[in-house]
Length: 87
Image (cartoon, rainbow, N blue to C red; front, top):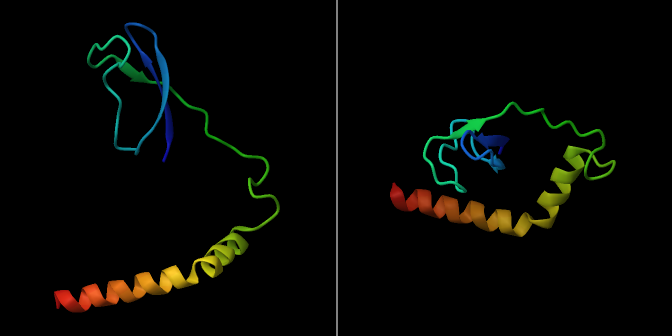
C-alpha cells in the first residue's frame, strides 16, 4: 500500500499513513477537528539495494512456492471442492 504524509491545517500535526490510492484522511486525531488534514507531496521511495540481498524476484518466488507447496495444494483442493458445491 502507498504511504502518504498529512498535515493538520489547525494544529500542524504531521502523520504518515498507509492506505489505498482512492482513500483519504480527513479528520485530525490530535485536535479532533473534522476535515483539517491536507495531503502533502511525497517523494517516491527508491531503494538502491535489493532488500533481500542479491536474490532475484524469481528465485524468491520459487523458494516461497517450494516451502509452501503442500499448503498451496490443499488450498487448490479446497477451492475445487467449493466450486463443485456451488454448481
